[in-house]
Image 1: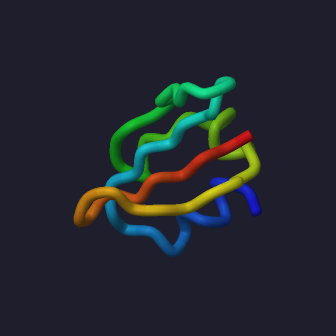
Image 2: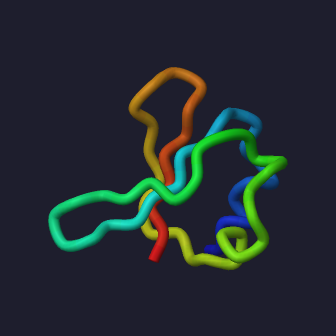
Length: 60
C-alpha cells in the first residue's frame, strides 16, 4: 500500500517516518492535505498511533 492510498481514508494529522538502523527519522508531520508528492508515492510498512488524533506511518 502507498501513502496516497492510505490518506484517502485518514482525516487526522499524520507523522510519516523512516527507520534508520535503530533510529527513526521524521520526514513529515502535519495534515494529509500538505504531504509532498514524493512522500505520497512511498510504500507503507507500519501504521500506528501514539497520541489521540495523530496517525504514525512508517515508510520504506
